[in-house]
Amino acid sequence: MVEQKDPNVYAGSKSSSDLERTTTGHLDTDIEKQHGNSLQSTNTTDPNVVDWDGPEDPRNPMNWTGKAKIINCSTIIFLTLLTPLASSMFAPGVPDVLREFHETSVTLAAFVVSVYLLGFAVGPLLISPLSEIYGRRPVYMVCNVGFIVFTVACAVASSMSQLIVFRFLAGCFGVAPVTLGGASIADMIAQEKRGAAMSFYAVGPLLGPVIGPVAGAYLATAEGWRWYVQYEFRVMTYIPLTLSVTGSSG
Image (cartoon, rainbow, N blue to C red; front, side):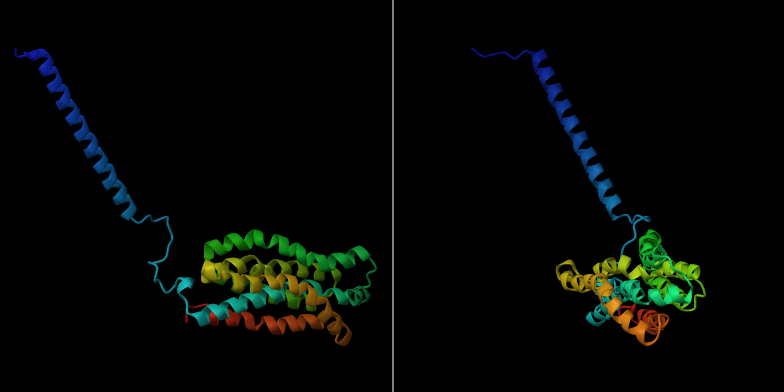
């Protein structure tokens, strides 16, 4: 006995299969379109994204020569040692400062030393965002020159008020290598080789305040409290020139 198919059931199942195939086809088409759009958006350069021209871009500090990396890292490490050294080198000469300016306040004597560190706290609030806008090298240059100018101003200060203000501004400019040094080293040295450079960089803020009072005591006794400023000026004068020469991939 042959089973007869109900034409209504058969027609309904056929239309359901056609609908399913049509729906599946539309879904596949939509997925392909979405995939194509995603690839197109990936390949399109976003004007708001700032990046290097490929992994071999010579302007990328990661692609600098080993000599350029060593010179730049050494300069940054030296700066990071020198500016914290200035914070405590002044301390042994404070009695001479009080005597010259006819001051007797112990609080003022402590403040004229610590106000430099207040500049270390205020400076990064401006230095960090400026380095992201204009780049690190211009900020280094401006801050080094500013540190020289206000350090010389400390040497020629004619009152305690002037000395305090100039010390504060010298701290604001002098904190640049401490603020940007780690980021600059990270821009040049690959992560797996960065440990040694960061170790030398970290020694500066620790060793500077230790060497400062020893050197400052000798200088204050031999030449007077203003002489240490001349020493800093002679050393710092060469730093902007060094950065301008070595701040390249050559």
